Amino acid sequence: MAGLVSFGVAAVFLGLVETAVFALAMLGLVLPRFLGARAALDAPFGVVVLVAAWSSVLDLYTTVPGWDIVIHFLTNGLAAVVAFLLFVRLTARSGSPVSSGSDLSGTVLTTSFGLSIGVLWEFAEWMGHNFVDASIFVNYDDTIGDLAAGGLGSFVAGTLLGFFTAHSRWVPTRSELTSVD
Image 1 (cartoon, rainbow, N blue to C red):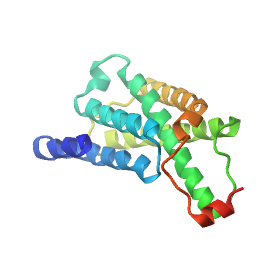
Image 2 (spheres, rainbow, N blue to C red; image 1 turned 180 degrees about the vertical axis):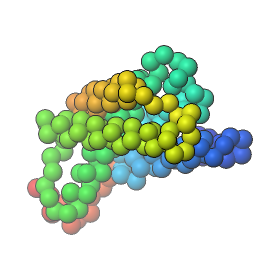
Image 3 (tube, rainbow, N blue to C red; image 1 turned 90 degrees about the vertical axis):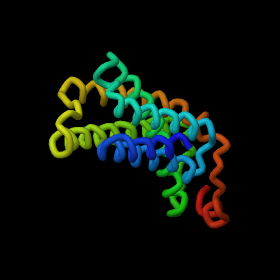
Image 4 (cartoon, helix red, strand yellow; image 1 turned 120 degrees about the vertical axis):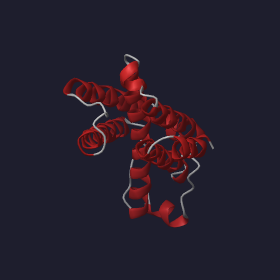
């Protein structure tokens, strides 16, 4: 509901860029539910996505020292776990056996997904700055700091993967159960 209200507020009272920020956030809010993530991942991911979106709209990234690093740490970490869940769901459906993520491979994959998401995000920030709105803040130090914080957040989230993925709401179909050892 908070995502819908935020989108409505942006659409009525704010500009096109802010409305697009909340449209993107709303996609992020439904993805964990679509993947059957347990509440231990779904709730904090939703909160962090909305905080990140409002932080952008309220310009907190440039006015509150260190805020950008905190949000990149949290958002990248949780997004990496969501990406890991998506990977597990896709590979389970294709018949490839995949680890539940309770070991080193889950941490490495989650960290890799988080770093990749960070690179894509920084690329999107650069494109936004150059082609949409020059007020979007980008510079070398900011980009490297964001990537480092996001990578660290993804590593930490990867080490907590068992907590985030245990007792998921995703119920595999009979064919998915028989195709995964």
